[in-house]
Amino acid sequence: MRQRLIAAVAAVAIGIVGAVALATPGNASTFTGCTGPEASVSDTQAKAVVKDINPAACLDIQFTDKCDGTTVVTMTNWAFNDNKFTVLTVELDGKEYTLKGGSSPNTETVVLGPKVENLQAKLVFRFTTPDGELVLKKNYGDPWSWEEPKACVSPSPSVSAAPSPSVTVSPATVYPNCEAAIAAGVAPINEGEPGYSLALDGDGDGVACESGDNVATPSLPVTGSSNTLIAVGIVLLLLVAAGAEFLRRRRNHEPIA
Image 1: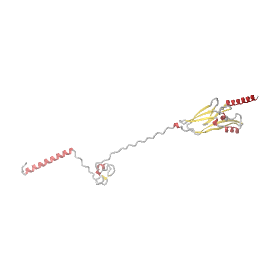
Image 2: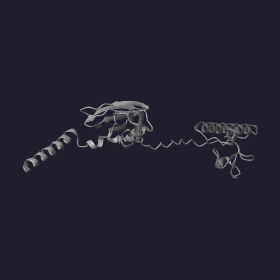
Image 3: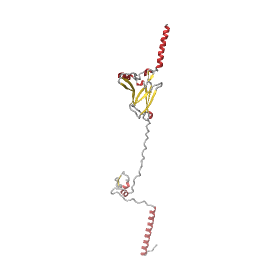
């Protein structure tokens, strides 16, 4: 009799454990408080229910920022109550999304942007109270703002050294004489200024082509044509001298050699 009683108790215990194991997933206790009671409750009771709900235990929301400035929001319903998946309502950017439960998690994907700031996801709960419907909302996590992903940041362009500007050296200004300098309107010329030369500074005081400096045009070099003219002139002078001597001797009746 005692053995039969022990066997019966063991069978009941195994049955209870098995029923709980089949009816409840391993993390069921995490999700049992995602919805409020279906019966009518007071405002105080409804607020107490929402206060005890952990939004992260009811659904999963992932935010993924893209290079084009948008944010992809993926919402997954994994909440259930008494082994029945609940229907969750999520408010995002002023719009409500319904996440239905089922044999597999229900997922909703939303693309927002560009460059959202302080985006706050909220769970929306609706209760029936003696005064009518009561809507309560609870924030899911912290607000989200778009940030540029590191993969989108292009490396800064390398700064190449600017080519050195080419320096053009102008030819030195040379005046053949002070007349040319005066004609160019640059006289007098101080030492160190373009066009100054000792040849134009007659008194050597560091100022060329001033009053008193020699402004004569320098003598021209002797060329081959000049040498020919000089030789011809000498011959003519000799001929004239010889003719004059001939006439003198003839007048004086001197013998002519």
